[in-house]
Length: 136
Image (cartoon, rainbow, N blue to C red; front, side, top):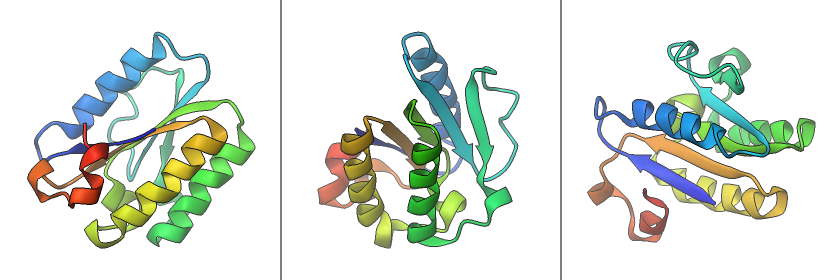
């Protein structure tokens, strides 16, 4: 499963994802990861959630981002859920290549039984029709 948390800057997307990750922790059988482009919310998350500051890895573009995600999945087969806060900042991805990223993560989700929840700085009304099914 791939889901998108949409909204303009300052609408509470991160807070929503932090709350979702804490709720998921109650029933998760595998590991939960939380990726963002800084250390801003490291202390907001339960210590059982693996926190990764992606800026430390210099990820640029969709291919490097997907390679990073596949690398994490390869290194830890027990990842059940991955939250990606601020996808555009994490990997310099924008609306023009969002569909490609979502499709590739959907394949990874099916193959490795890991779910992905990503926040993007767009209102639901701005999302392309082919991505509407992924919007929470």
